[in-house]
Length: 238
Image 1 (cartoon, rainbow, N blue to C red):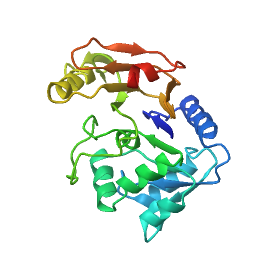
Image 2 (image 1 turned 90 degrees about the vertical axis):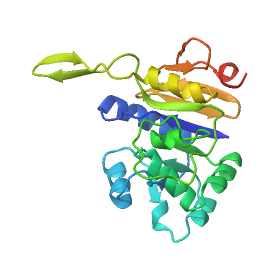
Image 3 (image 1 turned 135 degrees about the horizontal axis):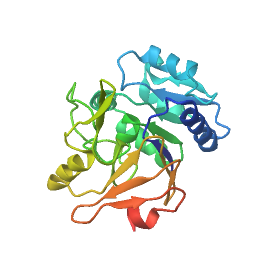
Image 4 (image 1 turned 180 degrees about the vertical axis):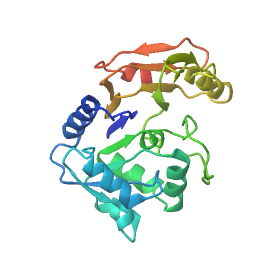
């Protein structure tokens, strides 16, 4: 099983270069990547923007939305990239088109899976640690379960500061850690807070952070800071 999960935040030239480097290392000699744009409303514009802005790393992106039969498209795919956007909308459409089980099977058979933001959220057992608004109700919160824990993409530690009239003011709202603690009041799976510009690579039983660090939250335990470029398998599944 080969999985690359990104938090997002690739707007700068440095971050975009990191994204492309990780994609080329991960996909290698793959020629065409099946792009899943369901997290955004305008699928064709999404795919076009990914290519024009350099987020495709030079690979040919073929939209799953261009096929009459999405399941058949997945069956023929060399690799898949599930893009970011709204996780509720993405989960809704994965259920709507019956793609969850076929995608699980293809990834288990060795098809490389890459997800960013919402595409990372749906690689988890459920989509319950997303940051998104529920703009549509999926049939279930169940997602792909390609990793045995939850991920909170776009994670940042501490409080948000807002710039106003040249000064920075503390937002004073709930932090991401507060939200994850609320999740653990009702759920038991660990949650990985994945910082912007950071990737989690899974190859078989090996887990590795690339490009940045993360924070692991477990019900009843202190937060655990995780550093990049270490084998994290014992922490995640040990």
